[in-house]
Length: 54
Length: 220
Image (cartoon, rainbow over the protein chains, first blue to last red):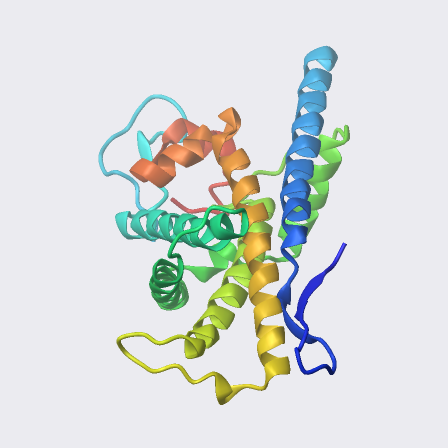
């Protein structure tokens, strides 16, 4: 997986940095989904504990 | 300052019918910013996902609108509102630690927050960083396009510097996608519908105020 995008000069030489790699977009979406899933699970667990300890 | 709808007492809650949480100006700012962010995300990422259209003009004009909104918000927050409502202090960090521990099963006492809880303040800080990064780099990127107001001049920066500017813009834009998804989740959670209503209509009930907030930390 690439972190950055580069352009290659047709005249040779080193690659030029041109931006972030868009392949990372699913990872950012995945991180958000992970936060949601963890929070939802912990909230459900906390409510379950509260019900059963009452 | 936050105001209470005058002379409307009820028997329950804090003794007040409604407590104003967001003024019309702040709600208008919030929804205009949301509209800008949605348009910017669509014009940025739909072409990348294969849906091709003329996105650049819509993108830069909306970006300039977002920059103006952010500037207005900063001026209002610093000079016309109580910026301490959003300041993260030791009390907030302790509260965040305690809330996380409670979520993990600790029986520590529930501490009521001020107008914004620690998680909301941290979220605001994160959004502020990525929005300022994307707006700052976006304004610099305007140098690379012709508009009715100026001619392009891409030679202000070296190719390497432009690369760094584009990298920051790209990472911040992808981070905004993540923050929007998380924001939608917390906004639509049934437990926080009263906050969504407050962002639409401006108020929370006196009962919600008494239930969710420490009056000594948020003096309504």
